[in-house]
Image (tube, rainbow, N blue to C red; front, side):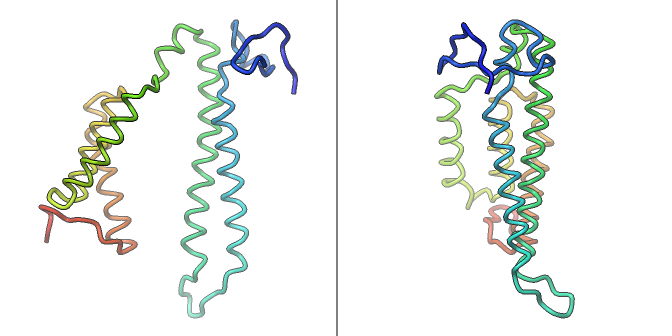
Length: 186
């Protein structure tokens, strides 16, 4: 792995990246290696799971066999891994072209307060999901966390509602996982 001399990052090493990612001073730090590794590992795991499911028994009569659910999850995981890799490469190019000042504006700062917001969201779900139901509770949690992380409220609101409804439909209606209905008992 090529190393630039005279660099002083956390471990004392800096990866040398292709010129398109290192177009400004410090551009080698623009590429998030962790996201690339996580995306690649997700895709590789998905590929291995999908290949392994080929050995599962098949049911007759056109019925889906035991391999269906793991294959669907593997495809979703593989797609998400590829999206993570593509997004990481895209944002590395954007940050390299915009400079260090704009990079700081785009990054969501990870702080302890974000950790406590998520813990609070889990406690909120535990306490109120039976009363309000999954859809309302999940939509509120999603909306609050999205706006906390900088998403505009008029974008966060429809996305939160749609996300909660899709998750409810997928798990409660599609997979028959009992989720709390709360005020939506019908």
